[in-house]
Image (cartoon, rainbow, N blue to C red; front, side, top):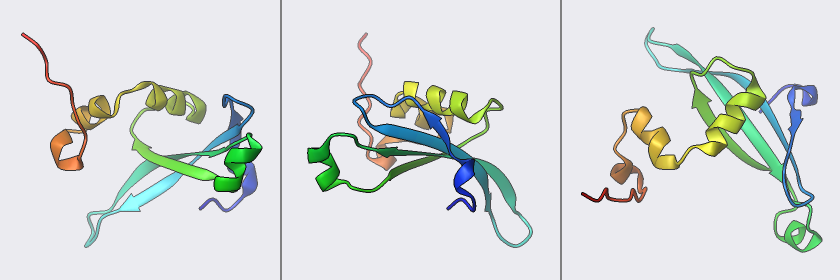
Length: 106
């Protein structure tokens, strides 16, 4: 995904595992309607030998953002959000994405 291994920045990851983030530009669209978007990817590797037997390689999680802060801060912000909050801000219907959103009580 990234041309150079040096694009990855190490971040905190609990339980003796390791995690890194990097970013690139994702271009989408067709017929002259192209858009360049900021794509941030976090990769994690588990530290527990028993779990490494199940997932020996990096696991990747990617998201698109319009936040204008450094890569590590954007990843931290993204991890602190509930999926339903992120979907709602994007103007999407959580139900169509299979997300269960708690009902508000009156």
